Image (cartoon, rainbow, N blue to C red; front, side, top):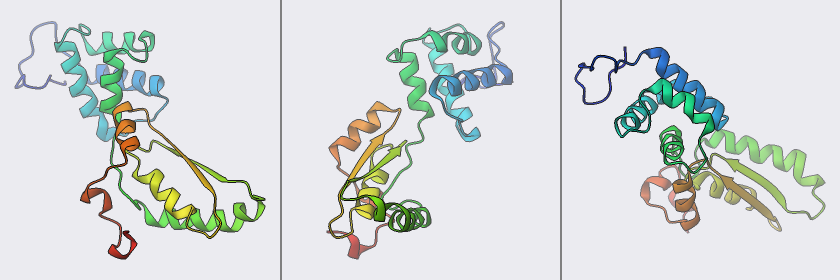
Length: 181
């Protein structure tokens, strides 16, 4: 049995939620957002959902799961659950082995066939933008390279921060000092 946050294991009669209710909510969120949500996020999502139930958004997690497909994309409930489902972990040059492999594939398979067309790439789930900018640095580093990178994320507040392109030291934790301007 799942207990709402702050309840210290005490649940009012009729207000009990089961692991099945949390699972139903997770399935509804996955369908709504088109994602497969990591199991590590389930507790975070349940906590946020319990808060929404406590605020009167629904009477139970099950009801919240049932209502979710019918809510507008800008509904505060959808936005709150979207934010809770967003991992947001990003930094420059994250997953360097993957970036090196991507650069290799681009140089070997794609670049020779571009014929002066800009290379276009999409960073899906870019959070606050560090990975999209890393792609731009990686792919635009060739002489004469023309690169167009699009970053997207389901969390609008992350995208707002990405547009500002202002980053602190934590974002540069995998960048070597000689790579900095």
